[in-house]
Amino acid sequence: MASVNKVFTIRRDLLLNQERSLELAQNWKKNKSNLELQDERKQFNY
Image (cartoon, rainbow, N blue to C red; front, side, top):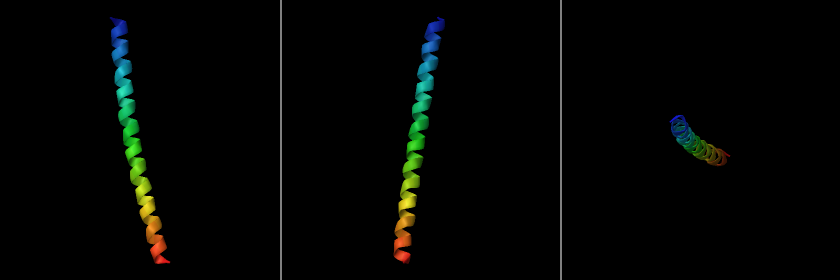
């Protein structure tokens, strides 16, 4: 029974890690597009 619980714990941790990395990827994309917008604004200012 203990090994079954271990498997579920590992699976849950993997799912949590996947959610976390998805969140990080989305934040990275958001930051990247914000930086690109800033760059475009700078080009127009010159």
